[in-house]
Length: 367
Length: 245
Image (cartoon, rainbow over all chains, first blue to last red; front, side, top):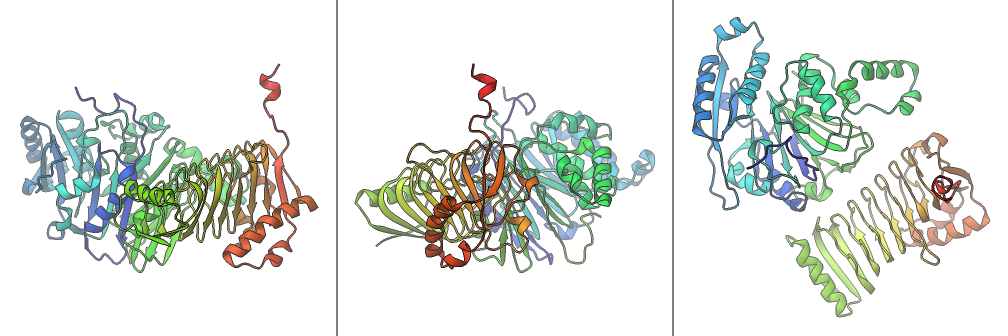
């Protein structure tokens, strides 16, 4: 029997990569596949995935649900639920190519939907919060169904396999986006399963992650108090929800969010000026449970841009680069140079030092 | 000179090819278009010189036991991991854990290095590994260092505070770090002290700075004009009293 994550411990290796055009120019998935493929050795074929922003301009006002079903019963149950809560404007199978190495493929469907007005009234919720609750319900209540992504004008394509094979399988060369992120997975103790591949998402948020979070249970217990359900028991899932809570629901500016997640060590705080010290201490007091401890390098993406971040003492690699309007982040410099041989600038961000790239004309990463 | 075009090559094929050439006593091997191939020069012996153009992948020169590698570009993580002998010259920056557990040979970097450089370097009798860094170093420089020499020049720093990150020399119990610029005491681990370099130290520094200047075209005299500092451990057996009865 295949064990789901959480029943098994997974020390992660992994590769991550992200490419963004700050002017919103759309480009195909070829480059991101090339970049993540260069780091082939960092993965072991048990998980690969991509997030793409700007791929559904003709349906940009609708929530695009990408869903995995492990059996047709799950599809029936989910569609009954979706019809009850959403107007489904369009739905269909996500097109794929046959790739020999990609096996045990679930049913992969996508839906373009809007929440039903009467349900919004009944639940008394804003649209986004309604979508979040519905995603949590499907993931926790319908056996064999898993919402892969639920944002607007974006989508996640992931599965079990090497990332370059997953890219081929989903025909990413046929999509155009202004942000692409990618992940190659190295779970050494688990068979891996389709839902457990990165990116992890909610609404427009997506997170790819290299590392492991030793504070996972502390983070999970805290985030669950706000109505999030950690059904996949992976560390990355909880990071996604922490970003959603702090940015979308609590409206915190990005620098405060970064200070909460990768908080400066106490001896560093002691050397700060009084005003900064007061602020950072307050953040650590109020959001202590959002502190992510353990080695990580992550790329958070949403419709407005990307945030790349390392743990405070940089126990995972990360390199960033720029070229004109393009921003690159990857686990290895060569993965950037594979698609951008001569960047204007290349640097290795310090631990806890964020790399933030926003679309032109946008003030913050949300809304 | 033998030339290899590494474009699109898998690291296994590339490294097999390099080793084959070394076996045939090739004096110089130029490897062009390197794109992240790992393990280049791992475990090689002899007197060959490998010149790399591009970005070599992780663990370059790991377990290297002789030979010279020159990189025209930036290197990634784990350069000179457990290297035993030979020389690495990098005309650019490198990533994290450079010289991890290194036990012999010399590494020269023109630019900056990442986190945990020289972690657990060690020395024994005449085997004394040396790392010379032209630019800045990240945090945890010389962490758990047990032997060898790190020379930090910081030639590109405008703000002297930025020459090295925090926790420099944490857990250090052997070897020495020389810095051209004094390091703020809060950045040093509890296990080390900082004093001015003495004449004997300056002789050692001069020996390696001379080579550094020759490799990268810096002015030796102006580098040596500085009053270097020396960072070394209080105790070579910090836990001796804890376990040894």
